[in-house]
Every structure is written in structure tokens, then in C-alpha cells.
Amino acid sequence: MQYFTLNNGVKMPMAGIGVFMMSPAEAEASVESALKSGVRLIDTANGYMNESGTGRGIKSSGVAREDIFLVTKLWPTVYEKETAVEESLKRLDTDYIDLLFLHQPTDNWREGYRNIEKAYKAGKVKAIGLSNFPDELLKEAIETMEIKPQVVQVEAHPYFPQTELKKTLAETDMGLMAWYPLGHGDKNLVNEPVFTELAAKYGKSNAQIILRWHIQSGNVVIPGSKNPEHIRDNFNIFDFELSAEDMEKIAKIDKGVRYYTATPETVAQYAKMELQPDL
Image 1: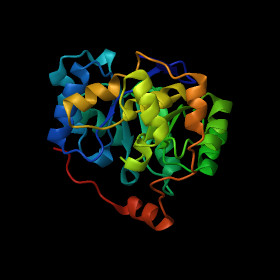
Image 2 (image 1 turned 30 degrees about the horizontal axis):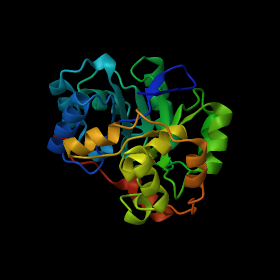
Image 3 (image 1 turned 45 degrees about the horizontal axis):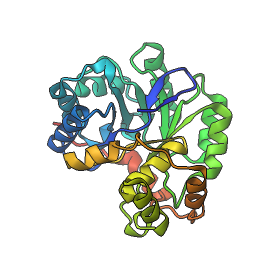
Image 4 (image 1 turned 120 degrees about the horizontal axis):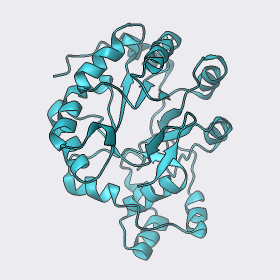
């Protein structure tokens, strides 16, 4: 495993598993399988409504809590709720969260951030992050909040490597966690000739080449899977290294294309969307 050291000194594994779009039972099984396979970074969210399943998967894996880097996110409808962090801790069945994100940049994000700052000062949260925040709000958080964010979570992949954002992050030693690291399963991306060529060169799959590109680009990756074999394959990317020439070839397929962009209307809906019970 390789690690990214956050700007507050916390070390974060650079590869893990995400449980987006999984039921609580599926999240439980995937987390248990991942942890038993050696994965130590788990990413969930109360908006996924599977924190309880994630917590059960951690318990049933037998892996010590202190060996796991646990990530979750607050949904906009609980940003201003004083007990929001405590409720996530209860669902996850843990005393602390390693990294806590605000999930979406709704109008009340500043109140949510201050809630996370309180939890950070109390030792219930080890690092603070912002998910899906545009550059202008990220810069506002950096300039105005008492505790500077440590990580941003955004869409990133070879078709959209977040080149400009990473310049901002470099100035503050912030980390980037990539969602859609494989381009939302786009076969055009995964089957780009450069990845097929490098897969043959290193004896890896195209997906493993892409995930290795992320690591060498400094990105933390959290590909999701319910398949134990795929989980192991996604994690098996630390026994080889792409050359500088390989990285240059991959850079040439940057298309400036992302798969998802939230509209103002969508963000407004997020601010009103109540969460269902997490069982």
C-alpha cells in the first residue's frame, strides 16, 4: 500500500473501496470481503443509506478498527443538525471517523462545515473534506474556515484528470479522492488502445492500469464492487510502476470530458431530499 499524508499529518491509504449504490446488506458483504483481502480504506456516506451495513462489515471482518481508514459524508439535510456526526458514528458503530466530507455544496454548507469543525476539535473526526464542491467554494473554505480542508472528492479519470483543480490542491497540500475513477465504466475509456498496450506490457488488466495511473498521479481511488474477485483485482496495483513515458502517453487522452455535472436545480433538490432509514 502507498499512503498520502494529509496537510494535518494524517496518513491515508491511496486505494480502497466505495459502497455507493449498494444496499446495506451488499455494503456489509463488500466491506467484509475487501477488508479480508487487505483493503484498509472504506468510503461510505449517510446519503448512501448504508452506513449501518458498512459498520457491520467492519465488525464481521475481524480487522481492528485502528487499522481501517473510515470515510463517510454528511448529506445536506443534516448539515445544521447538531447530532448529525453522532448519528453517523452510531450507525457505523465506531468512536471516530477518519475523514468526514460535506457531500454537496448546498447553501447551508458553511453551517455544516462548522459542525464538522466541532467534531474535529473533539477528536471524533480526524480529517475534514469537501465532496463535489466547485473551485470557488473550495477556495472560500480554504480562505475563511478555521480548519482548512484536507481532502476534496471529485470526479477524476484519464478523460478528466482535474489538472486545474490539482494546482489549487498543491498550494495547500490537500489530497484528491477520485470518484468514477474508471470513467463510470465507460468501455471507450477502459478500452483505450494505450491501456490495452500497457496491460499487455505489465501483465495487468486495463482497469488495473487506469487505477495505477491514479496512484502515480497522486489520486486516492475508491472503486466499488460487489464481486470479491474484482475487489482483489482493483487492489492488486502496487506490484508494478508505470514509466514516465507511459504516464505521458496516458496524458494525451485527456478529453476534458466528465460524466456527471450537477445543475443548480439538482443541487436544490439535494438540499430538500430527506434520507430513508439506514437499516
